[in-house]
Length: 80
Image 1 (cartoon, rainbow, N blue to C red):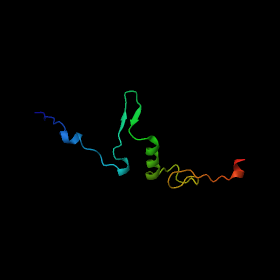
Image 2: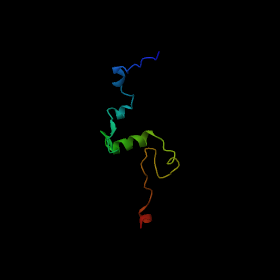
Image 3: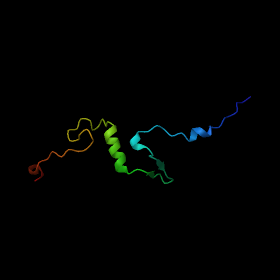
Image 4: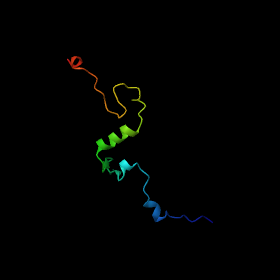
């Protein structure tokens, strides 16, 4: 005889994943057109990722500091 399928407990749906406190309340959705909708500003998300995620493609670059910001080492003479 086949086993009876059990539905998910209603408590499982209400569980939220553990997240970094900086991103508490972050919600992301993809609408029917494939557009990404978030409740956080994209600049805030990018700043968080720059601080917390190591990008191995940018690891050896000298013009980027540890915070992910570009260093402008050009002098006024180089710009002319």
